[in-house]
Image 1 (spheres, helix red, strand yellow):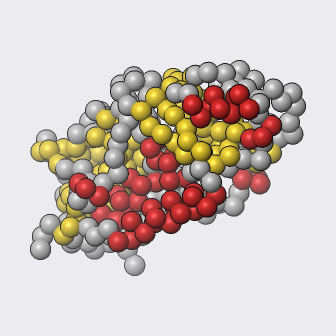
Image 2 (cartoon, rainbow, N blue to C red; image 1 turned 180 degrees about the vertical axis):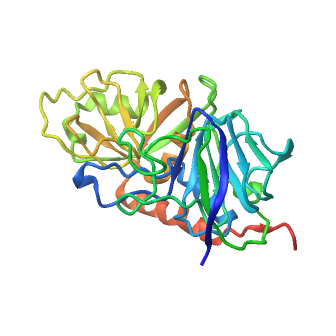
Length: 324
């Protein structure tokens, strides 16, 4: 069993760095959001590069600007957005595990492409669980360390398991970070499974939704992404509040769609066109304001097939051992 030891001291926490495991499930009925990593693909590979189980606690880093002091030797990996990484001033590669020693300083600079990166360590960070999960939901002040983003002076404990392998995910196997934090720098396509309220929208609004380009607004966070574009309002005057799934595309009276993410409210009363396929959420999570977004329709059968294919690709992808 891994020994719990102090692993890192937070020197600088960045704009918003939050501890996340795979998520908190089964408690939406009590009003608690799922939490968990927005970019599941990058989170998954950070864990694999550290020989962790894929539910271990990692740090989700928004934009960058993080400085940590190592209090013990361990192995770490950083994946996701293109953020410059140094240990004691020496540049290190993303998508590759790295050794770090006690007294070393890890710096993660600000992103040049994408929004979020994931820092995993061998054995995972040791964080008290709330309702079966360590995931931080800042809006609800639960999980992580006191339900807040990382702050200077905090000590992060780790489960320091023995791990001598230095691994790399080949560039051809890495998720493509298409979006940039620069306005209008990229375009992504999100596949949407129409929901049971889809037919309640006028035909011209449905066609407009799938034929138009929207832009990510400045209102985008872990709760959801508000988009700017043509009016696709439903005309529905009243609707009972109901549970909301990950990726739900709800349309408030102003006709501007909102894609709801991990920290979304658990119930809502706006009509919904459908939901974004779960394996496309990671792409959206790396988008900054101004990124262009288009939607395409997908069937239940197609969605299931895409998810199965994505899981199969993960399982057959082999990491490169750099010390063989």
